[in-house]
Length: 414
Image (cartoon, rainbow, N blue to C red; front, top):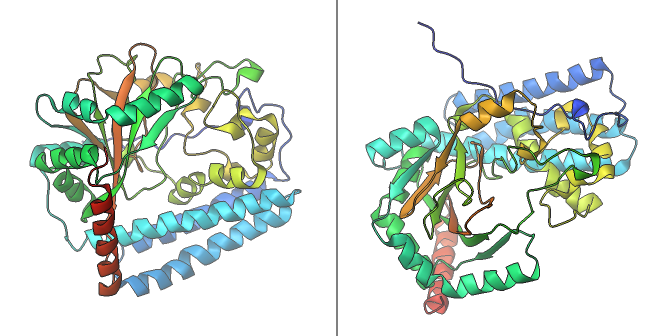
């Protein structure tokens, strides 16, 4: 019996989307579009050959990457830029491609290190589930959420003040890993084996990268009304996205019980971390928003988190690019309600409810969303881990010294 192929990573046809329909397109014939996609397929094939081919030294891998990935991708970007009518559009394409190189290079380095078998494995059941589905929940012990909630009091007070000023915006504050809250959380995760689980999944040791407390409440509209100006309702898949760092791992810890989706439950699209995709387009789309923002500086209304899709001029600019460069990493808001894929994707989501657990997931490869509240407010700690870098002894000593100094200074912070 043949195994069913996994669904391909979903994409939006913006040319037929109600908010883009009728806007002028760029100077691209069908043959031009075909040549762009052919060039992308060549880059993807070269990337896959480097990912699965013989292991190389870091220097040899970088040399092959520059020759087989960077050179043809830059040539593609430059050829597109020359055909575009507005100079800023060309810079948008070129700089987005340059940003993609960092992501693709990191993926290759981690893939080659993982094949060396350098990491410890996590708990067998949790690791199997994480590998198969892209997400899992690890118990932290009864009362963990309530204890962390109490220790987060100074941070919660800051967030409540921010919410009173701009209730419609998303609200979060960074948390020091060296203060009382951060130390307590990281100790809980270590006791539960979360660090070993993540390393077992990724195939390389990981190190703490960032931590923040997020406050979600019913007054927020940051994910709503993107296409209100053309009468398109907020998408049933609003905020569905993937993260910028495809080699990191993420975790979420609710600080109080989440009972329903209306409490801002975290959703993960099961198995989406394994869905086939163009790695080059996937990486480029992770940079299109940031680069556009730096060049054209669109302003969204109501705190909406994707201002270039809310802005009519920005929509028109995107349609002037080849089809392969339409989109972004946070594309869930662009599904219209009558798209037949919506019901299938919603049915494939796993909702995480409850408390006293760490939700561990591959956010850089898999699709997920959460924090959209219509009922009870949600408090949640979100943290990320990155592959541990192999540094020369001198840099490693300086890095350890810097972390030690920060830990001493921040030891008595909240």
